[in-house]
Length: 237
Image 1 (cartoon, rainbow, N blue to C red):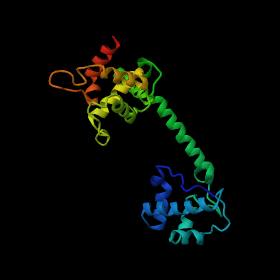
Image 2: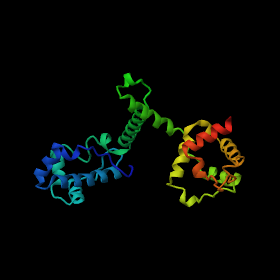
Image 3: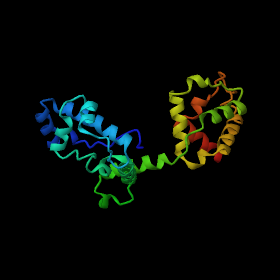
Image 4: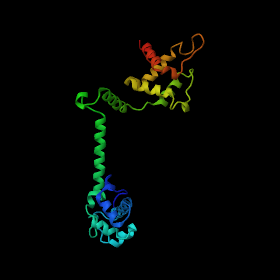
């Protein structure tokens, strides 16, 4: 028994055989294609090689609800006595396996092409286009930012600062900023770094609200690019 789908070429609706059958049967070409699909599906589900003793013109006419449909298929070479010609090329498990293998190879080539290993001159692509593709490929290898873990660590180390409402985090600018900091440097993708970063913030009287006016930093402020870079440089010196 075959799979739950059949292989259909994109140019099948425009094949000369379709129009010839439409003229013989005096029906629309699209109606011919629909009835052919019904026949092919039935044979695909009931045969492994396209040969069935019970496939008679009467059965096919009844299956398609069209008198003379079997004769029309025979006249264009799409039906022989008790069998479908070239069955294994288009129907059955072997045809589907070839189609799946072909699609896998195509996807593999697409992935390979999207991450070019050649130089700009060799690939013939604009340098900015190549750089953009390379950056995309590199980013795809970076693990997703563990937002919740970093937020939980922030709450644990800096409970005095304004807390984060996780329900409002997703889709916010703060989420994008944290993702950007995560991708910015391999060092920033380590849990130890964020523990170190938050603990250093805790030692800063200004950021903890000790300055005149009582201003305090919050996670959104800390992870803005300019603020973050200045703090990391300050804490590292």
